Image (cartoon, rainbow, N blue to C red; front, side, top):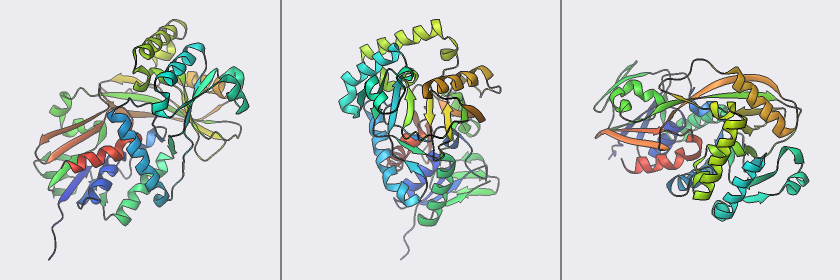
Length: 374
């Protein structure tokens, strides 16, 4: 006797959609994914390709990151795609940043498994003393080449999990348990909307009440004299962006003091929302550098030449080497006060949105929770 598999339709074939496809297929669903483009072109492939542990606040988000990173460690060897398990190094380039890292290590270092490195230790490890005062070393981060990983994950799901992914098939509307697609009507037992900020076009009233805005960011690929940079490089500027560094009153006070200093001495940095990250993939002569943060109801049309220059200058100073621009691009993702949203506007429809640009870090664990609740 043939057992009926419940049919799940997922809108969006980015990281979030594919994570839900994996979780659902492993729980016995027949999964169909609908993607309007010929490949994923959104936030999943436009950011650093970083499975982050260090930046998440204690509690739910840190646990989601830990579970997702563990799942990645199981998946990546099966996918056969490039990745690196080299952790991260958060470099403090001035006393303000060093004070934040020292405070973090004293208060939370044992929980996060980090180590504070002195200027002398950094010099012994090959970092110029004048480019870093101290650093916070984390062993947990995983680096990906997202533009290669996402297509490979898509192919693997189709080959091994019987997931059907329909590219160039735009979803035009959702009515109860029916998708209106460019190729006809699709009936499903449940629908998951994982289309990022584009869900505002399918659920405009829901979007209007969600508190979501769009974050536009500027990214660059730069050329350097060939050298191997194993860990993902974060900087003290990231302390002003990640919630992990505002978890105690003292950390919040130090972060505010640093933000005030930047506004007075380097106002363009907070104006553009810059927090420098450097990610090297498998080419020792190239690095990915970013990013900026501009929040509005719509994605910014024009990118700031000033911000691009600042990012290159900060990177050159950090690495103590000249850099050259190869290409640059814009990323856009949904942003809200909370890091993700799961909404259920209809009994058989669930919308899932990452609203903090951390899909690669937490999507696998979050998807498992969402699918379990269907």
